[in-house]
Length: 328
Image (cartoon, rainbow, N blue to C red; front, side, top):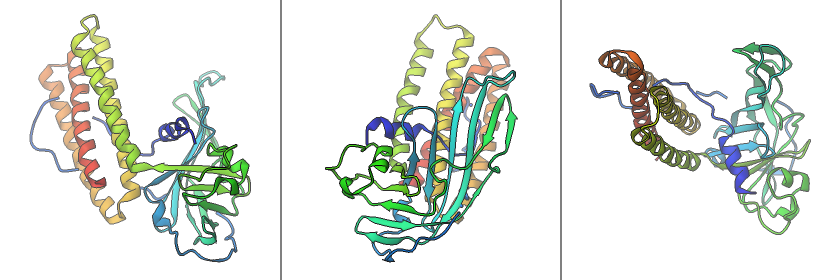
């Protein structure tokens, strides 16, 4: 599977909580939900012994061609419940007042108990599935036309095959291999867990979600450093441009915060996640107080906008590292 496909899947979507965020010190901050759920259960050989849903907890599965703006992301919990999102976007819109069109499906469900097929394959049905929005409905929100569908890659899924790392590629269906980047490769072994919707031979590759989010944070540090250098050294920038760069720096860290939060939802027990959510709400309230203070002390105006965005970036970055500790 090419690295480009892995990068595309990792960037394809972030599930999460939207936070806001900005400059100034104050009192010490407070220290730092998914529910994600259709069809018959397959009958195969013996109960699974060497594989369990817990093996998939750190993984995010991605179904995508690696090109274009569509993907289906899916995560599985240790109890077999799963959740995910399909989206495809056309940024051209077309109709008056519509500047983009998106096909979308947020879904939750539960897999049936897996059964062993052979040394590298397990089979499971979808015991239940539900969609946040009814398939076939549509609406317009803020100039975006949303069409709600079934999740691409899970249609007609009576049987989902789980291929374990090390599965011989030559023994896996060619159409499936094409989806995960190994169409012509029959000599090597599969390097990751993969899912196959056997009805259509549609393949979901996987990557370690925890490691990926750590890598994304490292890249965010590099990008933020570039923003900071430009803000400090480029004397040709107008105040409006400085404000925009500062806002982009905050957005950068806000995205990282949302990504870390999505992984925490997957990794932490429900009780721990509920406690962390309460703590997060306290932090958000505290952060908003700090941002209001920045504006007040700057006396309003364009400079206040820049200082607020920079403080938001600073506080959000700090929070990202607090939350990362829960994934240690």
